[in-house]
Length: 194
Image (tube, rainbow, N blue to C red; front, top):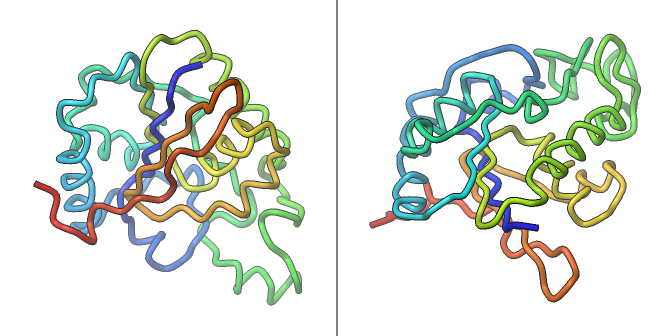
């Protein structure tokens, strides 16, 4: 198994407001663009054996701004969770109708189940399992959290314990034969990257 570099897309208007942003294709904010450019300086010169990106523009644009889009392949399984009825709504808004609801334990009418997103994450892991070298994955908060849980051979719901900020970099690898988290949720927009 290769080392995986998980890159969450830069800030959007909906990440700022806390709205569930699944299949709605919205652009990066000016700050999101700056975040991705700083992340690009961190990734500069890193040789990747494979670069995969979600087809959604916020992930593709983040990939482009880091300088890796030319070698990237679209991976449909890296799309964000289809939130169905929750799309464009905050958890607080949904809880007014469904007290106690959260994405990790609640029903998602008209959308994907947690298990379906976990199965997509498993397909990504199967695709990259025989790659020699580092793999960069440009995607979204929830799908990357679920992918990390599956990397650790945990059920998808364990992704709830792995907070992931916009324009963050996380690395998954191995220690001997065990899958591990090498680093998590590193932010480069908070410091100046040479």
